[in-house]
Length: 141
Image (cartoon, rainbow, N blue to C red; front, side, top):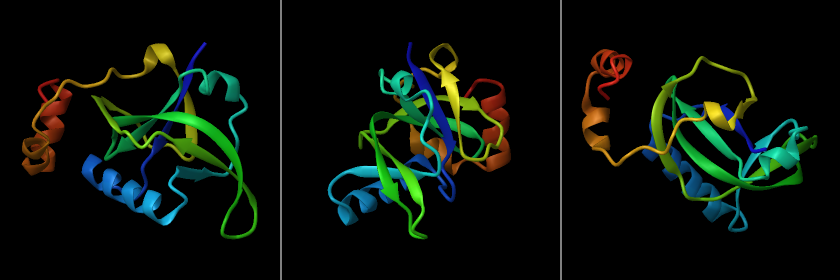
């Protein structure tokens, strides 16, 4: 049974910002998109059975990426880490509010938001935050 991971995209302002940062990481690395995390998921087999990482940006799950594999890695401080190797394709999801979390959490497949229909990203990002928040809560954005 597939299980997903959900994580806050720390310091990220928008989906486009996440795309830019990840493109830089691919260019600076060995062509792989890797996201470092402290702990390796114990439910590794379930995550690798079609699982994705769902990104929380500004209080909402907004995007997902397929998790390709896990690799052992060493962090900048010399400690063991787990690298999540991600598919570079980011898929926009239906907006789903999510409370702040530390690290990552598991999300069962039934709870995951669907891939979003195409919409005008520019219009969403130019609205005042308060107005956009209210429209989201009403399911209009």
